Length: 132
Ligand SMILES: [Zn+2]
Image (cartoon, rainbow, N blue to C red; front, side, top):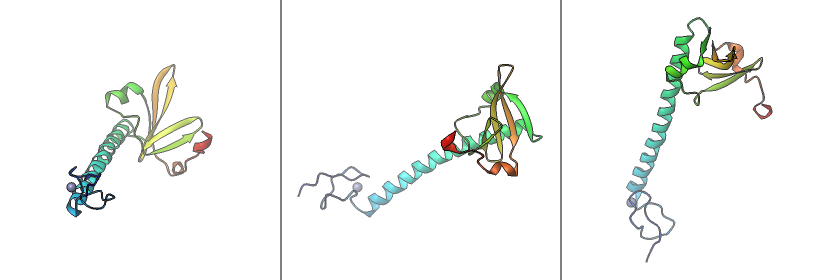
């Protein structure tokens, strides 16, 4: 009997029930393992970028607080898309990577970043994401 479906793993036509997605258990396992590996790789890539961001902030902020020009972060390869948490205070929005964070700001029209080390009180979000 013709079956319109093909195996998701090896693309061979599947005999029997048309709702089957794999030839057999071994095809299902290798497909799932491959997918898991792809997921892991994507997570690992972002994790390593976040680690790099943290390293940059920590390097630039040895005393708990520091202000640097944005271009310093750029030169060190900071990736602004990736952070692990947010904190907002007095008009500044801090992008944290674990225990270090920065808030974008301007000083005399120059783009700068205020870098801080996390304090206990920063563990609360501090604002409503839906009212931001
Ligand atoms: Zn197969």
